[in-house]
Length: 113
Image (cartoon, rainbow, N blue to C red):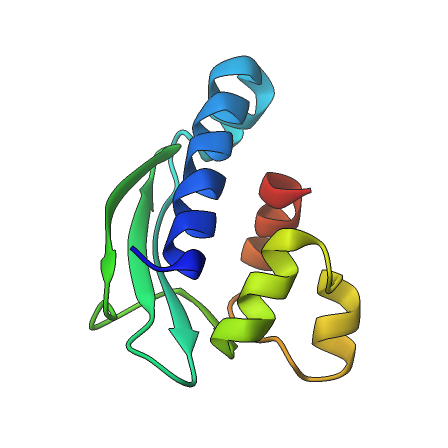
């Protein structure tokens, strides 16, 4: 397991804790399923499915279809996870790009914020 994979796995565990504690968030996500790709420009990336408030199928590589796709280098994703790079700065400087609906972007912000 490399450093970025470790950060993503920790974020998934944090997400599980947040879902367990927050009834409103569980309710909001109860009917939502999204395929998510984390595309890194310098390796195969990662993917998982957020299915009704649960994270399933985390793996290396991309899902064939995804409603949410995040794009950055491995170094920039790592910097985002460690707090060295702030999400808004990464987006404004085009170090982080995403393909997703505005609703999904707002939901992601709530989940990681």
